[in-house]
Length: 92
Image 1 (cartoon, rainbow, N blue to C red):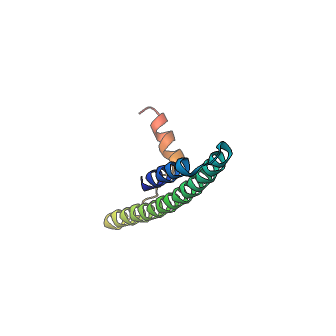
Image 2 (image 1 turned 180 degrees about the horizontal axis):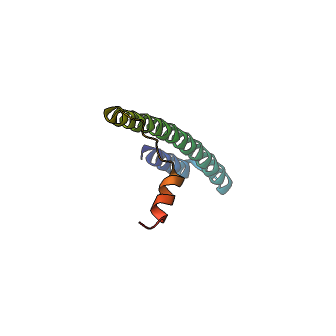
Image 3 (image 1 turned 135 degrees about the horizontal axis):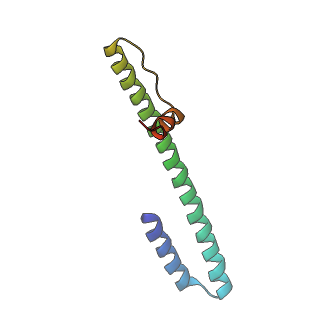
């Protein structure tokens, strides 16, 4: 949210200081480029966090399955998406 408030403040300052339309357009283009770069950085950071969460959840699920299999005394294969889909498609 601060990104947009900071950008709005910069834009208002430019409106006060602009001497011509060309100056204003050039300044707006500069602000837009800066905002775009910051949003790209934020998006990449979010993707890294989501990747870490996915890895952690996968490890947690595999550990839980291994623990459940150890209790039964026999290994349990982890169903793939295709096997699950085929089982769901077959009528019982």
